[in-house]
Image (cartoon, rainbow, N blue to C red; front, side):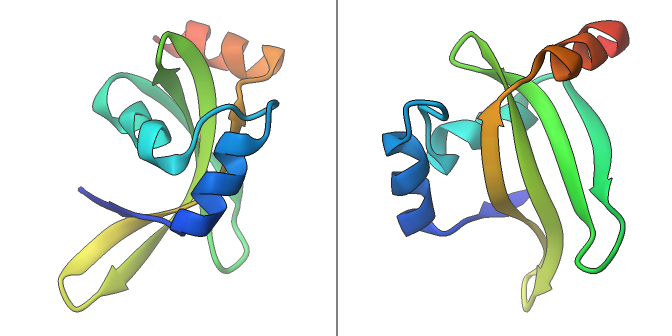
Length: 93
């Protein structure tokens, strides 16, 4: 799967102490087990994946998009997983 994101936004997320990482690190959520939930079903449809990044649970919001090479994930935002998101992850993995 290909992953794309706005590198300027990634730097802003990394600088935010509540976020602590950028999209470069966050894309590793998709390397292991993750909990997947539909976040918004109105266009554009967005998904939330909760999984491990650097030994901490994070949630990453993304959209599935298309370009000339096919489908890719566009990372929209991220945050440290909430208590509810941690429970969802634990109950499914």
